[in-house]
Picture 1: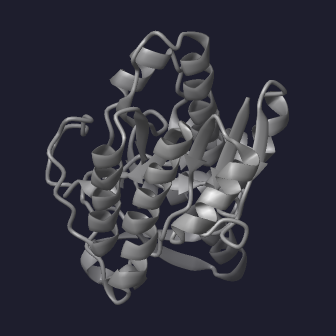
Picture 2: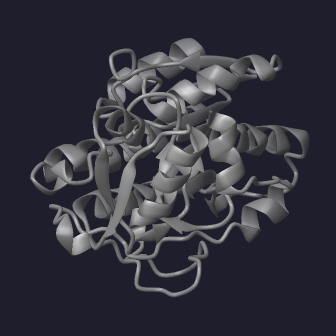
Length: 284
């Protein structure tokens, strides 16, 4: 079985490379943006013709949340047009698409975890383009998996955890916002979940499991709580101060509460999900 992974240099792409040896039954083909530019449909088709993938995991995305506010065309090219291009080529080659999306499709005003069928209402260019990418896929394909996730971190690429570790080594005191609530997601756990979706689909193809799913680790916290655990688990001695989001104005509005409900993916695919604290500890 051949699985093509786009965005191979991102943290999820690198996490999939890290776990690939655990799945010898899958022939993974990893493509970074140079090997496969999803904004170019003809280029995608050439790669698909050569590789003939059974599944495509799309981890390629424009994820610079604040920069997207001043670069909406670039965000749209990758997150919307790129997603549509992949969907159309997947349709032509009868490849099953697994597309990774985000909690930023929600506005964060809800008080309970967001389920897959809750109404999206993105408040940023990034969130809007990711939602439009989801819609583009749904227009082209009947059989797809869209997996929304949140607060992704790992030992790879750039992310909040690595920023905190760097600041912890450089500074005696830092401030982190404590009024945005969500769930940190270890990219390794997300990578395993995406592969489980593939294995279950192959195992029982007669069962229709296609659709939209949420995946993050279990539990929730603020960015301040997340930073606190990072420093606790790494025995970093630093003066950590909680502050309001108003102290750190950003170009893009963040959801205040973006916890995702995971009952559907646990039930349909039998995926056991670790708490965010356990998974963070495992990362170290």
